[in-house]
Length: 168
Image 1: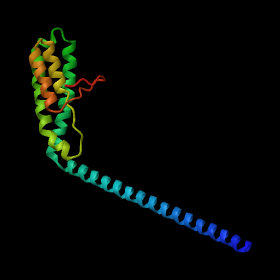
Image 2: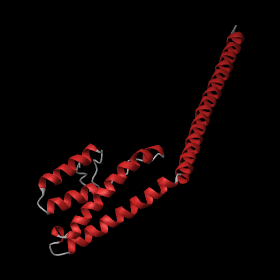
Image 3: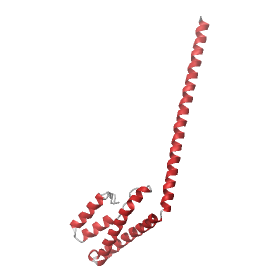
């Protein structure tokens, strides 16, 4: 009787160990399956990004517009810096020319927006709204400056690039 009980316990322990090993194998296989699925998903996402990047590179109109966009961006920042160092610079013909440049940049940004989205870029913020509003404020044209801020908000340019993240 004691022998039978002893062997029964050993048999039960062996069965429990087999079950535990089978469960562990099953769990590891499930983890491997999930990891492999994740690798496949990541590879597919990467391949899609490459396709989008290649399409953007082939779109010469887009590439030319982007080049002009960043040239205007640099030009606006440079001219604004010059205006701030000129005596009465914000009430000069140079400020009027800069306001026109800002308007051109805003129009180009609106034209590029669908392609930014098509090619997987997040919304590219334009500094033109901010600079135009700042120039108008310096000229004490507060209502037009406020109008530009409202347009920036309407056009989803909610981050002005400052650490405070002022809307508009």
